[in-house]
Length: 535
Image (cartoon, rainbow, N blue to C red; front, side, top):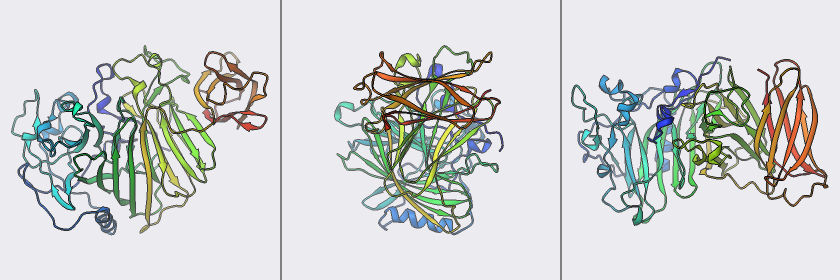
């Protein structure tokens, strides 16, 4: 398999001076990871210009567009040519361009929701079409330089007035007490990427519309959202509905996204995907994150912070109740790819379980406030697997983790895939029932003929009630080598239980490990899974 590189994220460019600027120039893998949104934009010349259609709009409207698009050969939209001085902007210059809030479409309408838009330029030269929907009628929003404050930028010529927008963000003010603060709850920018945050959260991991051939030898394909339709909400509405048209060489798709802000932000998603080219590896509900180092690091990094990550593990929940926890790894040399087969998927996600500031000591990035992302299917996705890709990264500015669901059956040209799910950005995690969870994974690497030692801590409501003399045991397996000195003991500090063991395994081949707590054969915890490879 080819060597993969994490994607440079311009919005991570300076964590020491971290200030959130919505959106990411995301992707994963090769130079194509910086693939940008490409589409045709209606030629309007003023912010007030609008082309209205009488035909009522619905999700079926977008679905039929996607079906017709997939029936033809893929043709990237011509887009709009933007001046080189906008393409060549530096990160700081691009961040100095800000949308004027008073130019947003619903600014004076006293709605809970409002929209702000991103300027094309930097690594976002190609716009998307933005349409507003009201009472079933569509109007296309036009771009104008007067909608933006260009800060300290000095351009050699005026900015054209027909460029279009590169994306948008959603503002939500739950009450009149928040007027003027304009808190942001979601952002759509870059290929099919979008992010959302709940109350008191900071942007971190991201969702994607679709992943195609991630980690494959032939390289990854990056579908793009090319059109958005945003429905005007009622004055007291607590949700915002938008639609998106996705296009790529292998498929076209229609998406309905209903955003519910709150302590945990939620998007109810419905999607129909029409396949142009069969045989591709289709990844549904992809999640992308950053993991530089955690408690399980085995090599020295010159950094004052104990941990640096947007998520620290992958959780996979089977419909029959089994729960798998896989701590994330920043591999030292080549990318890792692992599958977790599930007959019935209840949910999966990239979680940020470590919520203590002292574990990060970063006053700017505030990693303890990054949301956990959770995907919960709302229809039967059938048999398949969650695939996890981990890519070596030397710094925190790259998104080097991706996870997604792969259906067991290969796709065929002309096929339609339809799925619904609930996407959540939460501070804690999904309801995990009565099983205890893994709260930390630590390693002492092998050295001087001493085998590698693993130390796992479990915590959960079911554990404190158990007494030390009860038969709380750890079930442990290794795919190769030998597990020695397996010990299970109560952790009197946390009220949980600790497991430690040594792994004696020769060579540098990968060893798959599984550990779970049980009492008289009854499962007490989720199953910890790890893929260890000596450096």
